[in-house]
Length: 203
Image (tube, rainbow, N blue to C red; front, side):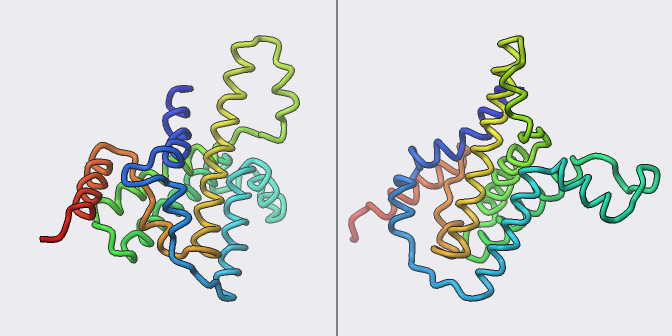
């Protein structure tokens, strides 16, 4: 389990440092300037609501159920995992659609959508991170470090999604998804081939 979270959540960090085609930071610096309008600002606010709901899915789930006066027996579902899966699916679908808008090949767009969905699943896990002070006092070191590692992975994945969607709406537009690295063998191979084509001298 710990290995799974490390693989999923270390992907964005690896992308920051070792982008297949160029440095991830260099791609951020060279992104086309995007001038946000009022719709971008409103969309950014809505994304903050989605992201905060995913960060605290348990609290949001029980608050919404209380506000709706829904009892346990009347509820469609009684688990905050509903928020985790639905929000992650929406994030993956949104990524796929934006990648297609910027003329990314369908297989690459699908791969980026799956990759972002996995990152969102890690970011939106119902872990009750508001109880982090209690986790620090778990008496058994192995379980304490295990839980802290999973919480750290969740926060890293969540921060990656925050910067991704804020850059899209407020700073760089579709360039964010066009230059998003796909951390899979086929994606890295495609990026390497593209880099070689751009580096080849004109005939």
